Amino acid sequence: MRSNYIGGAWTSSASDSGIDVVNPATEEVIDRVPAGHPSDVDAAVSAAQTASSGWAATPVAERARQLEAARELLAERADTVAAAIAADMGAPLAFARKVQVGTPLAVLASYVELLSSYDFSGERVGNSLIVREPVGVAGAITPWNYPLYQIVNKVAAALAAGCPIVLKPSEVAPLAAYELAAIFQESGLPAGVFNLVSGVGPVVGEAIAGHPGIDIVSFTGSARAGARVAEVAAATVKRVTLELGGKSANVILPDADLATAVKVGVAKAFINSGQSCNALTRMLVHCDSYDEAVGQAAKNAWRYTTGDPLAEGIRLGPLVSAAQRDRVRGYIERGIADGARLAAGGPQPPAGLETGYYVQPTVFADVTPGMVIAQEEIFGPVLSVIPYSSDDEAIEIANGTPYGLAAAVWSADQDHAVAVARRLRAGQVEVNGGAWNVAAPFGGFGQSGYGRELGVHGLEEYLEIKAMQF
Image 1: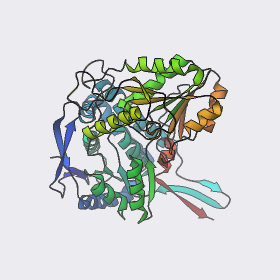
Image 2: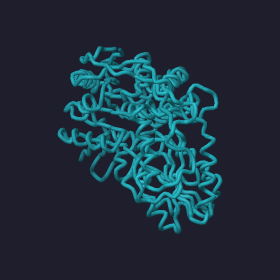
Image 3: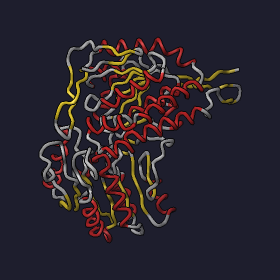
Image 4: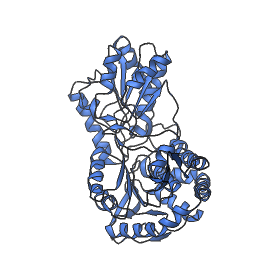
């Protein structure tokens, strides 16, 4: 069984219980991690507190050097880390290498660059000097869908700000976290600055959220779990950032290039087998183009070859677990029962894939905004195509869920697209397929959470503001 990483050393858990790590493509056990114990968190927090003042006082240039050293080692080991991610959460190997590892590399580089220009020394406001200082010890609780990227988002920002961190990775797909811990150990990061405690949310996650020695907790996961983290953290009045679910709308305006908007929209719905909080799972199309869009979406869906993540040409791997597979199939069955029409896919396993946690890429037509499949986060390769008759109706539908994480707008008129984008209640809006930017803030409105990750906004989540009057 694996160990925890505390105070710069691999340390056995206080719990004798373990959790099997299962390859979702083969259903075979490939590793085992500790189930965790609150005393493990106590030890990790103590190590982080011991390291806190020294790391906070470390010159910014040295903090940047440490992040760059970790980035270089990750780049050297990219293929190994990608293979680990493919094995424990099912991402196709090419996608794991390009996105699951490539994006964390870009995030690390962005914080190295940001530290070269960010002004920690303060600004003058009248007779006051406003300075920014590290919050203290950070806690991070991360999910399984992007098991390295979600960790690096938090760890890179915290370390850049001068905060040591205690991480609980998802026990479902933990192997990338262990790879990162090994990288930090080899790169020479001071002991206690990065700590990893394995375990389940109700034990280790709650111990982190409620620990009086942790000054900020950052959580990514479901809205229900996020609400629990906030509740537990409230007892110690610590800062909390939450990046939760989404039900993101892709608004295709009547003058858009329909073929491109649909093709890209399907890709953004199915990315990572649909296991992305910002997946564009609702495609809103003007009623005049609706039938054509449904046909094109179905045609594109059939191109998403599903199968073994290690095989050539595979675009969709399995879902991460049997529970997730069953959940997604249940939503597909619910959509059919509620009157939506299957344009592609369905609840049955893909042909020839009885072993593994696979789900067919699925497109629903005749979806109304109030249906369960149009309101709740499915977290699988399921797209709902919804008609509208005016901009106002499209915006009402797009804003008509409890979430507000991401959205997209397509139009031949850039100004028109931007005008619609400004009316969408979402933390990020892609305009005509605008590219992802790791320096731009990421976070949501409503039940998608609060706080931001990435770039300067992500850094400042880990900084306190102090005013000194003269």
